Image 1 (tube, rainbow, N blue to C red):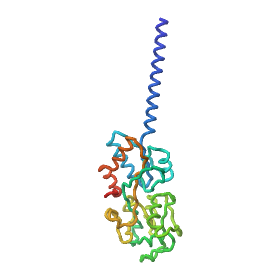
Image 2 (image 1 turned 135 degrees about the vertical axis):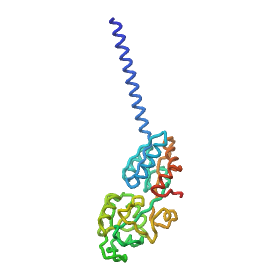
Image 3 (image 1 turned 45 degrees about the horizontal axis):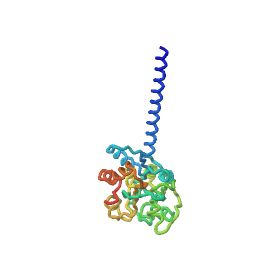
Image 4 (image 1 turned 60 degrees about the horizontal axis):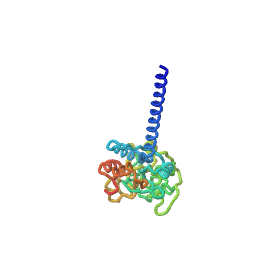
Length: 275
């Protein structure tokens, strides 16, 4: 009886040790798998596009990709430190050996309050508003109202950078000054302009809705056709940036973005770069 009891205890210990080892191995394998998973990172501006690309890919793929929404500095750090991170956004990240491909083109929409009678503005006039040379809408053949320009408070904001690249710094670099109102993001820009008839600002075309009024720039309406033909002179290139590495999941996702299914998603938010 005593020998039988000892045999049962020894067998139990061996089984428990094997089971614990198996669980630990599974945990290690899972952690290793998670470390190698591709993670798409994007900023808040292009989050809707990035999220739909990832969701659509995951539904139709044997792999599962994660997504993180970060602003530019944190996003750049992640891409620099992690080989399995992929960026979708406006800014080119100055990281050695990083591959980049332009996947789409978005437009920078100039917006005003819906009650504002202004229908068109030139790039020069827009610049002069933001460097405090034009202060009143009557200088734009509109009724007399003190202009309140909206600026993104985060200088790293991709839309702020696009405005500077397309308008503020042409033909020479200038600094913003004057009666400026600062906004944290695109949605807050729209809220300010919806509530204030004197305000003016800029947002991506994909964010324009009926709460604000989009006006022409240099006499050109912002739409898919004016972007394709390069008539509209304030565009935002959207880049896919990634490390060149032999990783099946990464390569599969890049193929998906370039595929007809990926292009369908891209065309919902902007125009594909080779349209």
